[in-house]
Length: 192
Image 1 (spheres, rainbow, N blue to C red):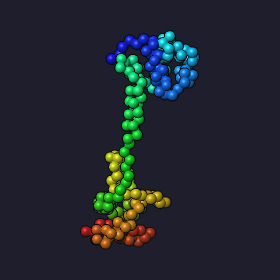
Image 2 (cartoon, rainbow, N blue to C red):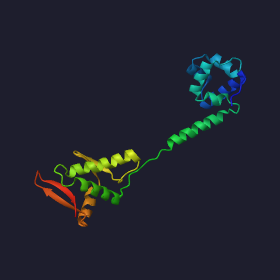
Image 3 (cartoon, one colour):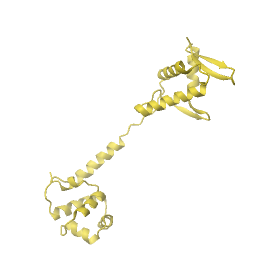
Image 4 (tube, one colour):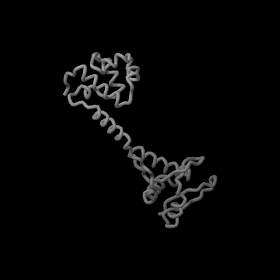
């Protein structure tokens, strides 16, 4: 609820906010483009503040005019609410990828079921499909699909533990490596 403030009350509030910001009268006066003696008179309550000056003060001292003009104004409350807002901004979630082997295997099998056996789909294309499926899922849901970490190679990103996982799947009969004689490329296909 807004109330009519006296010049003295306005001056006291400005003084409190200036001191909490660690500014001298000279620094604040320069920021709002008024003379230091004028600011001193405002703080003492001997001079009124026009709306443009008050707006500039609110920008420099970071207060809302509604809060400033309210009956229960305290400079500490304003600073606390600013600190709370900053704390909320800092509270960002950091997502560290953790490899989920079963999920990785399922994604690999899904991609192979839909792409294996096509003439233009070799291991390089498979690596890129794995990477883009992980990347796209993260963009949409801000969670890692497989948690795989990728390393940069000349032909594109490759999952770091892919060879180990593929060899395990081949040993269990879940995958089969097929060699084609067209430029000797390797393909992976799902086992029937």
